[in-house]
Every structure is written in structure tokens, then in C-alpha cells.
Length: 251
Image (cartoon, rainbow, N blue to C red; front, top):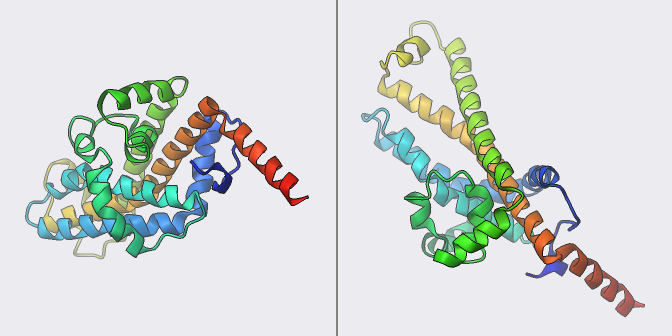
């Protein structure tokens, strides 16, 4: 870890402060994160939604299931931005083979898909390269003291995504032109009567909500991870000594 090149101030923070740091990181590095998100989530989700036009509700769970891969692209962008690197779409494309092979993606798409500490533990698999027993031990050490908060982050993000998508659908329902109300009729949807066009609109609403929430979710999990490692390994002290050494050498 090149602590002297880290683009954030390392200092003792509470877990809630670390989550707020994640929000600041997302805002500061949103350009690279959005490019990573568009190359993965949007490039996968939109074609799937169109190809599965006549299989109304199959695209929704399928796009959701593939989200851990897109999260890895987001973390790739954030981890590079942490050291002041600018991330382009070409950088993301070049990184995709590594994100497919060396980040614990298979387990993330299978037995760990419903884990509630995904964003917090993602760096253990992707950045540290931990596997098997070593990954489980590492996860237990890092999760102590922040386990409930990392779970709460996932639950909160899911809730916000749900309400954002619902709000978008209600807004669309309000502005649908006369004669086309059957496309987005919430009453019919609740009864299970949904057209192909309505399912596509539902997909778009969910994808829009996810595109707003997921960059925050991954950034907050990453910030919580960085804060926990800083606590355990004394990164803030080491960074302070490095700065003192640089100032002394410049005198």
C-alpha cells in the first residue's frame, strides 16, 4: 500500500464518519465510477432488457444477479482514483478480464450472492486477493466492531433503490399520455398483469435507481474497509511519519 500517495486524509474516524467519507469519495470520483458503471451495468442491462422483451420479468432478476460483477468495476475505479489516477472507459475495458478471473466473482454470484456485507468485504477478495480460509479469517478480523453497520449499509441501499424505483414509476404513471395508461398502470401490475412495454419501463426504472445508489454503496463499503484497515494497521500514524520525513528532507 503506497500510503504516501493516498488521496484522502487518514485519521481516526468512527464507522459512521467512514460512511460519510464514502459519500465524499463518490462525489469526488464520480466520473471514473460512472465510466466503469456504464461499461458494465448499462452495457449488460440495456441489451438484456431488450433481448428479453417477450419474457417480461426474467430480465429484472437476471440483471440484479449480475450486479456483483459491476460492483467490481466500480471498486476498480475507486481504488485507482484513491491514488490520483484518472480512469477512462478504455482502462475499464482492459481491466475486465482480471475482474472476471481474480476477484472471487464465482462465489459472489453463487453462495455469497445474498451476503449482507458485500460492499465492505469486496476489497478483501478483489484488492487483497484473499481466498478460502484466509479470506474468511480476514473477513472476521475486519468485520469486528463494524459488522452491524456493514449489514445496515446493504439494507439501507436496498431500501433506497426500491423507493427510488417506485417513485420513478409513480412519476411516469402520472405523466403517461391519454390512451396509453395501460402501459404503466400500477393497479394492473399489482394484479400480475404487465405488458412487455411495461416490464421494459420497470426495468429502466430499476436500473436508473441502481445507477444512483450503487456507486454510493460501493464507495461507502470501500471507505468503511479503508477506515478499518487504518485502525488495525496504524495507517494514519505511518502516513504522518512519512510526511514528517518528507518535510525534514526538504529542509
